[in-house]
Image (cartoon, rainbow, N blue to C red; front, side):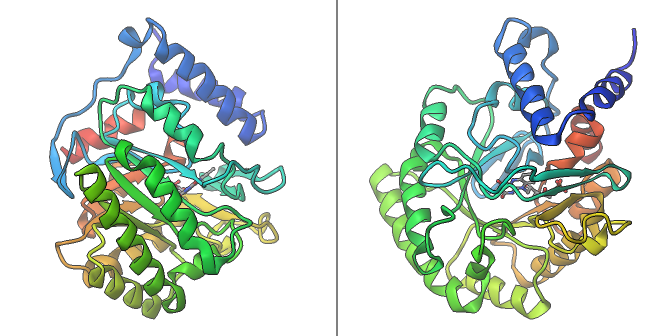
Length: 342
Ligand SMILES: Cc1cc2nc3c(=O)[nH]c(=O)nc-3n(C[C@H](O)[C@H](O)[C@H](O)COP(=O)(O)O)c2cc1C
């Protein structure tokens, strides 16, 4: 019987012949179909259980699926049965949108990296809400929200407020994604100029929703790896001031120099995977130094092995997430990491 790793290598060599976006949706549609059927019982991966309580939530283990992998909650049966301790779905926006022009995902295979310029392509928050209504979850689900590309930055908070109000009862935590490089000006929300007012508005809506639903859903901010030391400091101070529950460090980097050649220098979009590790870890380190124990820290960016996962834990991460590691290593990497962290 060939090993799972060998089977994955064979599958990967075939699927990598297709454009990344096609490969992603083909693989996930087939996987979801299989996991929804009776086969689920035979092939589901046993999850490593090393319970940990963060933000008041019980996580079966510390490794989660990062946002963007399942933007519309369409592959929930598959992604909840491959060993993760939690999954984050989205980014969703109030209205459905196509995103940026194709092609908008590229593989930098030698570097084990992905360059993506998707631009929040998604079916809208109402669609996601309907998917969640009919899903019987077996682990915490975070919902990652953003703004439509047409919404002016000055009114961005309205999009986040709307999304929050739609998905609040279904989320274990909510991530405010203000760090994607693929929506014009979005990252400006992280700046001193906008962040204070943005958080003020969000917290007001959060108070209203927790009263309405008699349920406290933690709020988490996802940040970019491309900020200066000063910018990270300002951001952390505001996160403390507004008692935000958690931070995700980091999203993709716009710095194409992290790649080993110049092939993508002129491409728009953000780099994820192996070459992101160092930058993401620098920001993670600063964040853990600036935020006390009260804020949960989720480390993401460049986790491709148990060693890189452990590095983030050593830098102070309470939880971890991965995306590109799945594309390059297959699902067996999940248990390899969760077993080693245990
Ligand atoms: C194709 C692709 C799409 C992504 N879409 C989103 C998204 O919609 N929202 C988000 O917050 N992050 C998104 N990300 C960023 C990931 O969640 C993660 O922060 C980043 O890829 C770094 O982790 P990695 O090195 O393990 O891939 C996306 C990443 C990739 C590669």
